[in-house]
Length: 506
Image 1: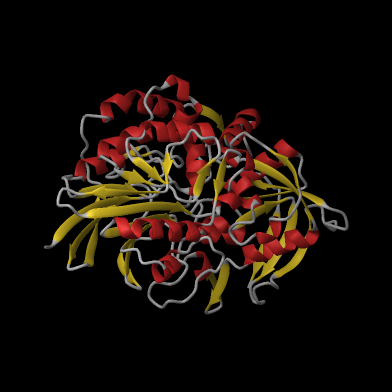
Image 2: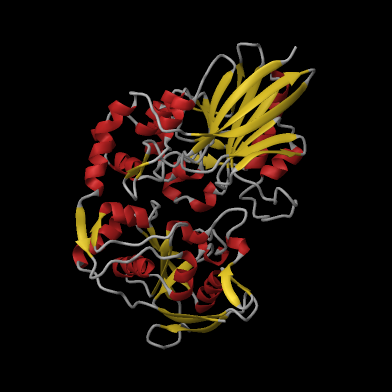
C-alpha cells in the first residue's frame, strides 16, 4: 500500500512576520502571515521549521526590548497560525539570552526538537526527537539539530544555562533511536552543505556545515536544511533527499512524498508566500506593528549630506561612508586604536534626515562591541582576508567567487578605521597588504593594539580565525543599532568622516 505525506518547510524566516519591507516601508508578497494562508493541512500533512526566527526585523527587535508591554509573542503567533508541528533552533535564536528563548518556546504550540542542545536551566521545552503518526498510519520520525558553531559565535552569557554538543554525533544518536520506531526518518538541520552540490567539490572543512556528511553517513530519508540561505529545491545526496529554502519568508518548500514496499520517494517545489493573509493573528498583532512603524519613523538626527546606496564592489574598492560612521561609533564608545566593521549583503545608504528605519536598514544585526588586544601581525592577517575579497578578470577587479558561493558573504569583507593601508591585487592572495601604518603614518608596533569589532567577528568567524585566540579586554552589552542612533543624535549633523586612508591598486 502506498502511503502519502506532505510537508511544508520553512527556515531562516528571520522575524519576517508581516508582509512588509521595513527598509522601504512598502508591502511585499512575503512574511509568515501570508505564508500561513498558503498552507493546506490535513491528517497527512506536517508543517516544519528550521530555525533562525528571532532575529532580523525591527518588529522582533522592538518586541524583545519591550516584552512586558505586549502579551502576545508575534513570532510564535505567526507560527501557531501556520499550524507548525515541529521546529528546531537556529544559531540566531540564541542571540537574546535564555529568558528570551524561554519566552519564545513557551508560546509555541509546536514541538521544539534540538538533539544537540542540553538545557542546564531545566526550563526549556526541548526534545531530541519525536514520532508523528499520520492519518494513513505512516510513522514519521523527526529530529532537529543546530550547527555547533553556536559555541563559537554566541556571547558566553547567553549560553551559561545551555550546552551545545556536536551536531553530527547528535544526529547519529537520534537516527539510531528513531530507526526502529518510524517508517520515514526526517532530520531538520540548521546547517548547510559543505560541498558543491553539482561537482562535489569540498567548499569548507570547518565543521560549520555538515549536511553532505549527514546524507552520506546517516540514512535519513529526508534532510531539511537551512542556515546558508541557499535556494535548493530538491537534490538527492547518497540516497537522502535534501532541500533548503532561501531566507526571509518569501517562499516555503512544499515536499510531497510517498512510501511503498519499504521505499520512500520525494519531490518538492518552492511555494510563494502570496499576497493574502487571514484576519487573525494579523489584527491582534496590528497594534505592535503600528507602534513599530511609528518608532521607525522618528527622526534621530541628520547628516550634512545624504549617502546614496553604496554598491558592494565600489565600496570595497574605495571605502564606505556608512562603514566609516559605524567605525567612528565604535572608536568613540571604546577609545580603541583600531576599529573594523562590515556591511550587509545589500547596498545601503543613509538619508540626510536620519530615522531609526534608516539605521536598522543599514545595520541589520543585533551585534554588540568587543575590544580585543591584537598585534600588527593580527591586523595584517585580517587585512589579507579582506584583500582576498577581490580577484582580477581581464585586469579588472571583481568580487571573488569565494565570497559568493555557496553563500553570498559580502558581510565578511571588513572596513577598518584608524589605519592607513593599501592592497595590491596583482600580488597573490596572502601577500596583498603592501602598506600598513597608523592613520598618522606612524608604525603600528611594537606594542599591542586595541581593536574594536563586533561580537560576531570577535569569534574569528568569516575567515578571521586569527582573532579567536586574542585576549578580550572589554565586552559591551548595547546593540549596535542603538549605539549608531545615539551617535547620530549626539553629533548631528554628521559630516564626512575621515577615519581611515585606504587604497586598492591593480
